[in-house]
Amino acid sequence: MNLKPLFFIGKRLASMALIVVGVVIILFFLLHLAPGNPAQILAGFQATPEVVHQIEVKYGLDKPLYVQLMTYLTNMIRLDLGTSIMSQRPVTDEIMARLPNSLMLATVAIVEAIAISLPLGVLAAAKAGSRFDAAVTAFTSIGVALPTFWTGLMLMLLFAVELHLLPAGGIGGPQNFILPSITMAVPISAPIIRVTRNAALEVLEKPFVKLAIAKGLSMREVLMKHVLKNALIPAVTLIGLQFGVLIRSAVITETVFAWPGIGKLLVDSIFARDYPLVQGTVFVIAIIYVAINLALDVAYVVIDPRLRSGVSTEWRF
Image (cartoon, rainbow, N blue to C red; front, side, top):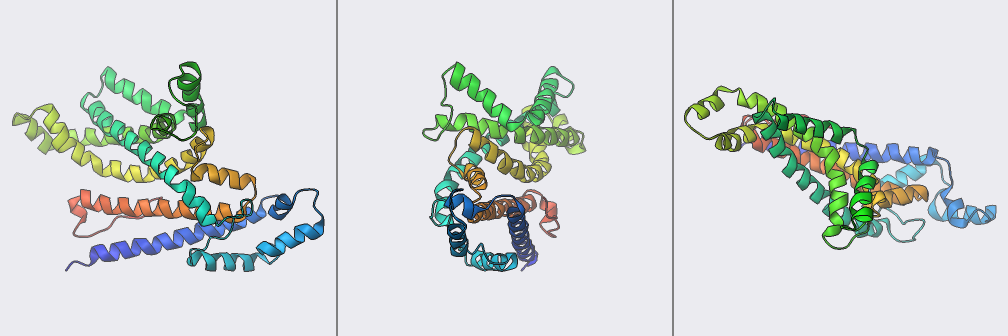
């Protein structure tokens, strides 16, 4: 029995735990270094110092930082993320009410990005030097350069305000997914197209591809059976890296389109200085990110048969 895959997964799980704990600790100190007192905000700026102190005692904000940190880490291990200062609801309930909305939007965006990027990258390589290739290259340059908030606002202005074809924001039917998902898909599809194109160009120069063409296979069959399959290996690696971009763009996109997800929840909780909600939201985002990277590490091994006998991929950030 080959135990290397089990050791590989165990090593990655240990790395996940260390990364998540590190993110939580860094965020904890950054939040407490930021200006503003959540107890003062909750009590109101006209409240007396006695009232503010009572709120600090209630939420443990009067204790030394290291005591607050140890308490939070202990509760985190038990999956107790505390109570939101603003809503007085458990942080877990607040996050779980928003998380499905973010996951649905992110899934639609990544599917759109992959469905667009892989075919365009392979076709651009097959038609290297043509006008089509130049147009695809121009699209990737523009896609990388455009700020996410600007893309979202321009799509909203065109399709919602001017043409009245799509809703400007909020969540509802399938039409509500179109503008925010495209806004999130554009910045992650551009680099995937570039990597897929470059990988496909290398594959097209391989002897086995030239042999397949010499045997009479159509270019479509060559691209589908040989080029795309081999170009997937670096593309999958980059897709894993793009999840970080996807999470970052989700925060901006959900704010622009008033999408009730954890990205908008994070922004609102930061402005409210709601420490437990900010920490809990980032904790969940960190778990999702490292879990996706673990899944892609495993997928990378499955796609590339050369790595199955000796799993040796390195953790990617």
